[in-house]
Amino acid sequence: MADFDERKRGYESKFAHDEELRFRALSRGNKLLGLWAAERLGKSGDEAEAYAQEVTRMGFGAGSEGVIGKLVDDLGPRADEATIRSQMEAALAEAAEQVANAQGS
Image (tube, rainbow, N blue to C red):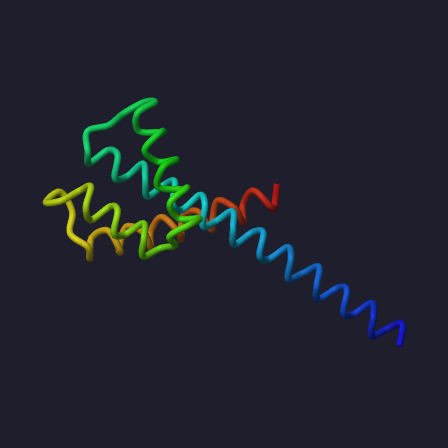
């Protein structure tokens, strides 16, 4: 029974760790996406950072579809939904790689 409990704790610990990494990657991906959108909106410096944080916060409440909806509205003719979705995928992939590399350090 002790072996079962140890194995169970190990799986629970791995699950919690994986979820934390996923959360970090998703947050970082939304920030990268927000910075990309900010650039298209002509924002830079603190204004771009503030916009990226707004996009990141939106991701916590509204999820990916909410973020995409916001960017479609904000960017208007500067980027269509397909472009935004493609950029979101690229940002999430880059963020996942960054988080993984940070774990290895």
